[in-house]
Length: 499
Image (cartoon, rainbow, N blue to C red; front, side, top):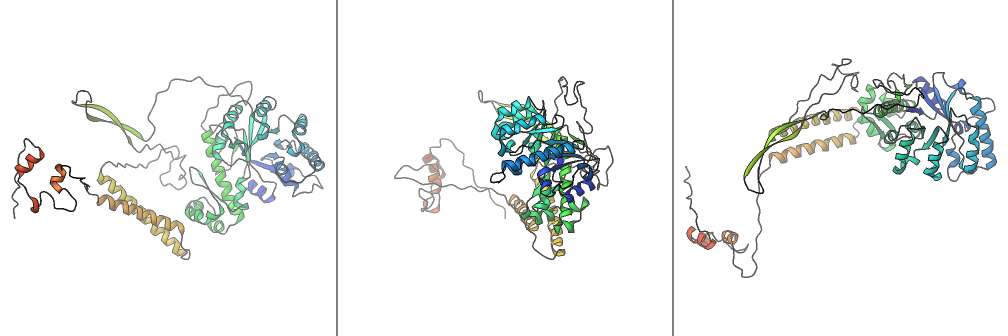
């Protein structure tokens, strides 16, 4: 999957992507038109480094929004200039979308497709045209674009997944990782990474996923991940001060890690590391083996399936134990051997794939993790010991955050308050376990003059009256047994207590 970082029609964004060695960028023609009058030729060659691949988006979504007042004559003029712009930069752009202005009508859009360059042009499908139209387009055009809003319907995902095996699909305005994984997308473009500067959002890659915080939570998020941000080489003071350039650098860094992570899960797409910025377009990630057909570079041959030995998931093992039970038919006491699962330290982490590789003192290329966690929680004592460890660790975090709060001026940190509540919860859980006891309570009542039973004879016929065996109404053991209907019993004398 090729990911185009769109929005580079703005010079500062274009410069940032060039400095960070981003290899695939996106350019909006309508966005550029709002900034440039085209009084003189504007070429991609003059504004982008030669090593960058440029995707050109017509930007017609700005014309397709409800309430936009543009005459058909104006749209026709813009469309003609777009065609000219594409022709002048055809050698420098990698792909471009058609001018899909919906106000002009579907017939007008389809009539223009006969002039598209089949090797680079991307036709755009709109949801209101229907799925049957999408399937028909797939038989006519090799490269089709769909928007993220269109893909929100789950019914269309299986269709897109099937089409992605036959043609090239482009996702426009994609920001959802699950959606990027839903089909074998050939390319995707998005301007969401710019929300860090446009809307004050904060994007932070935390090792296994990317956290996206809206503007109202940015202060808490930046404090929570301050160590991670600083460790990645960013200026935390500039981040806290809402420096647009530094926040965009953090966003770009996080998005590149996100795309690499999606690529690894996809099994094909962009290769290279986000740290070095040497991302290149390829069909498979490092370590993967591609089986391709000789007839077409985009066609993949399938390997025959083979019988594989099933294994337990890493981190799980089984052990035998003896289960004793009563046979429901004969009532006999029997036993059988069964198996139960245990969670163990799988230790499948590798140094090369660990997000702490740059800081770990035991890092060794090509080796597995040297650390292990031999934790076993089976008994009450082990459970309490685990809680003690958690309480200790949580208390250390709370006091460390308290010191940070004081250093930063004493302003109440909501993250610290949340961690204090979590510490109090752990302490309460331990206290409840240690104070656990056994309590038995019983409620009884008698109705009318019905004959009382065993419980009433022991505790009294009414809650207000004295128990039957109290000094006010004592009876002998033999009499009580006779009244209770006990035929045979042994009276056990109370043992003599030693002073």
